[in-house]
Length: 145
Image 1 (cartoon, rainbow, N blue to C red):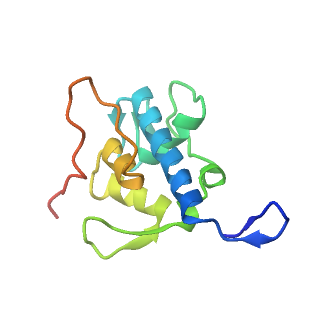
Image 2 (cartoon, rainbow, N blue to C red):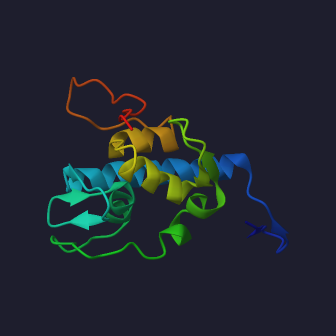
């Protein structure tokens, strides 16, 4: 993905710019996860209490109706370039290599990682905001095949 430099010339983003974008995405996932405490699988939102990891990121950026069933995040890649332009291999070892957005959905729906574990994987320096005194989430749960 090319971006415009201050001089008006197209250039590729630096790794620091991509990491900043990933850190902002991870923070949005964590913020949105606090709004809907349950995790959704196969849908972005389920009723008033559940969202998947990308749904949580959307809610971390926008105020949504309390019942968000059927809402699909639009233009999230405009806020977070890394969703489309950062490729990641599956940390579960299943040989998939996908854009970050697709990999987040894969980890959420197929491997059933928690939203907090996904946020930590997206940007490891972002600390999950659990209950006081609680341990941070593991790198991600492994589900049997």
